[in-house]
Each structure stands twice: as structure tokens, then as C-alpha cells.
Length: 164
Ligand SMILES: Nc1ncnc2c1ncn2[C@@H]1O[C@H](COP(=O)(O)OP(=O)(O)OP(=O)(O)O)[C@@H](O)[C@H]1O
Ligand SMILES: [Mg+2]
Image 1 (cartoon, rainbow, N blue to C red):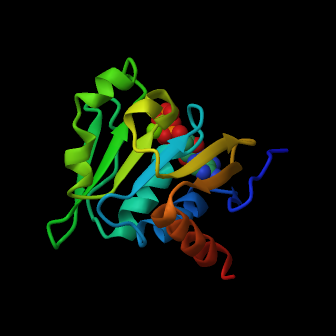
Image 2 (cartoon, rainbow, N blue to C red):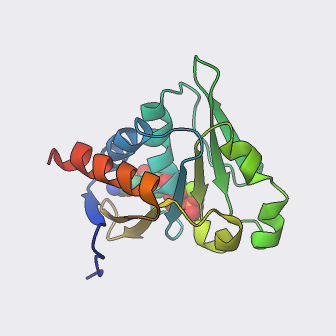
């Protein structure tokens, strides 16, 4: 059983479709400068969640795993951008610094898979989602936030997921 810190919440997903739906709720809330850190092993559902986030944010671009290009950019009709970084193949924070994340954050929200690998290169204030595989179809997500803006996103995300 995971320890849930105050101000965080847990979601259990029972299918990829449900994971995408949860992602859509979050995507609707994201603005430039917002950072979503995704942590969890291979197959935990990070990219699946990003598919929902990108769709909720308003992009029709297809979401793929950016493992080889490192950063995918999704667009919206109003020309704003959503950045999707996969840190799996980065050697560490030093390599991430070269990507100039600050420039991206000036233009759009940033979603990071394997965020724990480049923690030191990421802003301290972010929404973090720790994702765990329970079995074939079930996933456990624990959502935390640091900083006023991201705590505000967390509260609204929780309300949208639980209708509370
Ligand atoms: N409840 C669920 N939520 C998300 N994915 C699920 C769920 N149940 C089954 N799956 C399957 O698990 C896999 C998750 O793959 P996904 O690429 O999203 O994981 P990932 O965390 O991004 O992995 P990687 O570390 O390789 O990037 C997909 O094949 C998906 O269909
Ligand atoms: Mg992935």
C-alpha cells in the first residue's frame, strides 16, 4: 500500500481507455509553464496517459513515444504547443540541460516521462504522477504537487476526476 501524502490523491485505472480519460481531465487544465512529471516502470502507462493529456489540451496530433527524438511537440489550432519529453535514453540531468527546457516552458506545458532520471534539470515546482502497474489492466496513479500553481492544478484535477 502506497503512502499518500497530504494534498495528494490516488487514482486506480482499469483500462487504457480509462487512463486516457483521466489524462484528458488533466490536459484541459494545462497552461504554458506547467510541468507534469511522470514516473513509473516500462508499461506503467505514461505514454497512454500523455495521449489523453494531449487530447484534453486540444491537440489532434497523434501521440507517440518520443524515445528516439526525445521531445515531441503537439500543436493546437491556436498554434500553441505542448511538449512531450522522454528522459529514458538521456544519460542524466546534464544532457537534459542541453534541451533548453526553459525555452519550451515559455511556449507551452511540458510533460516528462521518466522524470526521476533528470530531476535536477527540471523545475522544482511541478505536478508529479507516480504510476504503478498492478496487473495486466490495472494501474495505480499517485498525484502530488509542488508550488501554488501546481497545487491549484492538482485540486482541480482531483475535482474533475472525482466530482468532489
Ligand atoms: N489501465 C491501463 N492504463 C494504461 N495502459 C494500460 C492499462 N492497461 C493496460 N495497458 C497497456 O499497457 C501498456 C502501457 O504502455 P505505455 O507505452 O503507455 O507505457 P509507458 O509507461 O509509457 O512505458 P515506457 O516506459 O516504455 O515508455 C499499453 O500497451 C497499454 O495498452
Ligand atoms: Mg512511454
